[in-house]
Image 1 (cartoon, rainbow, N blue to C red):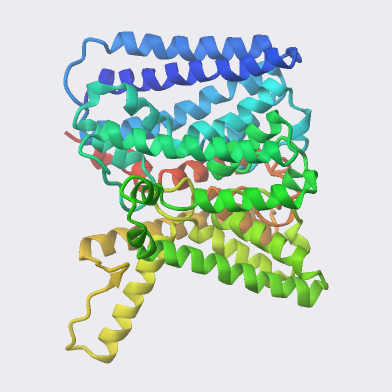
Image 2: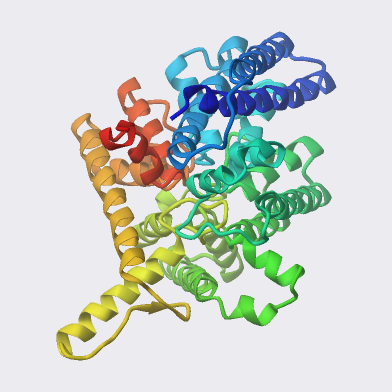
Length: 483
């Protein structure tokens, strides 16, 4: 494994990140600085300069990246992004504690949306824009951006793509990997532009519209306002964000099939899409009925609030229009369950992914049939596909890793004095990259009251959830470092 070859890629990632920091700097100039220009410029120079030095140090290394190098590069890329992403917060003095800044930075890049800020509106425009912009960068993955401009990777690029891409299936849409990434990037940018335009049309100013489009399409959930989307008190804005959160929770490859191949029948036949939409409708109707029956809400308000919060937590976006801590307890439990499931594979959503839920249900059906008919041959099938033993093993392993880390983290939070429901929901929100939990970590609260050790643990949970455990765990296993 060539350290300099990994360092060269990491250098390109940091250089691109440093250049990206110039965008919030430009926003700061548009809003007359507000005292953050020096911090943003210094952050950009430090990040880009470090990246350029790493690129120069590894410029003579030849050959393509190996699979092991790709896994190491992905894990280190996210760690370095989070570390250097703290610079605008720390240098500006707006989030002076490093642990808090790291938590906020990791939450942004992993599109988690959990926050230690009690008043996001108090941030300067430049730093506030950087905070939301981390969603945009992390939603698509800075590594995939790097793939577009790094032809040096060759066949090793596919290993990096598989290591970074979310979901159990990471395949190329086209023969050339760079073309695949460009297609996905076009889909991602198109959704961002359309969402921002509609939010601006329905009453947000341009700054808020762009910032909230980052959180919507990347399913991140950072808001520029203290009470999230509830601040705007606009049904039109709520419906726009609801629709785009759902669109962002759908596998992006389906858009390619629909637009480029015009095969809408193949899209409608997709088993994961049908399960995803079915769960959304069922949860929306169920919670809506609870709000009407137990809280006496009008049906229009109940439907809008239920659809928004179900879409928000199912796709792991994490925006809020209501304090669902005040809803019936069964509604809160349903929302936490949806966080665990998450959106579709190949989307910007977190969680275990809907396709894995479908696979687990198919495996359970197979076990039941085999119990009743031991001699019958009954393969597990989902979405028209037969699940092979290797895929079944991978799915069950990831589900096992998820609940293993979920259990350890929950017990630690409970041991440190957190209420049990807060510990359960808070850990679920971070592992699934969903943002708000319950109680003081709920939609109208934050994570500021937690100790530094808990914040670091939840920061690690965000990274594990974003890279779906195996990418990170493989790098830290002793077998990885053996020749």
